Length: 175
Length: 248
Figure: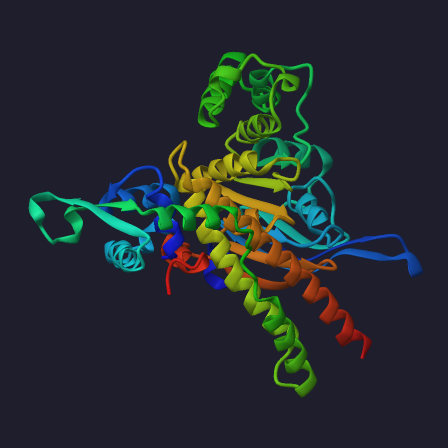
């Protein structure tokens, strides 16, 4: 779990760890299933050590992390503001696949079209998983929009695979 | 193959469709073998011009093959006479098209009941069935609307309800989401999922991977022939976390 995400979820108001976790789960839907309770607390502990988060009060002075209320420090607030303003986009690993096809064809290691078809099947399985998850979300779920983003990215990847297939079919029949 | 053939609802053997002659000969469908089992959802996917729409027309008896055979529920339909073929289309196949093909001067419920009326059902039976179907597709409150007053997604749901009017053995859909935005596509896919759960046999030709991915089996078509087949089962959200980097 990215530290800034946990930090930003705290920006609304000081919260217990379990409240943060509930917010994340609501926003992520089925994607949040993979997130375990420990991850949020581990991240909060790291943020506390880094001086970005402070424990506001502990019920009965208990040391159990699920009793603590966490709040942003001024440094934490600044980090959140920076993170919000940052422009980043995850880099899809297209060069690796592209080079795999070229290397496989050049050395006769495998038929590029077989590699493309195998990759397509895998992406279709993922697309199916994302699509079914989107279809299963209740009305008004925040997570649908995220799942739709995943679906659209996979569709784009599948379109590129189609272009790969066409190009490699062409090269094979040309040689 | 043998198990699929045993319960095959729709089948094709050596199916061909050619246009033109000599130099200009186009093999739109070139030797297709297909068996679709009862209750199966099969997607045929390929770029435009690969012959998938022509294939669907041959399977549904909208067009006649140049060679090979099509059988529906074990009965050959490619050699039926015009009258018998028209009857078969009305009663055993439901069509869904990209452009909806609704009658613009008829209301939603009138569109949906039309195939039942043409098949000789009484007006009252046809109307009752149409209203049930509109309820199934979530449009009971739009029954008296003209198509022009409906959104694209709603129009396609009306068209799907119409396709179900005579409880067809198989529903054939040609690019059913081609004219729809993302949210309306999701609605149509949800509807197909429900049809699938109720045991409806469904064949969808599409270039949209999103539609194909919801099927049981996806066939890739290029230049009139099948080039790859993928059986897509399960599809839980278990692997989703890995997709977005939530898991290590």
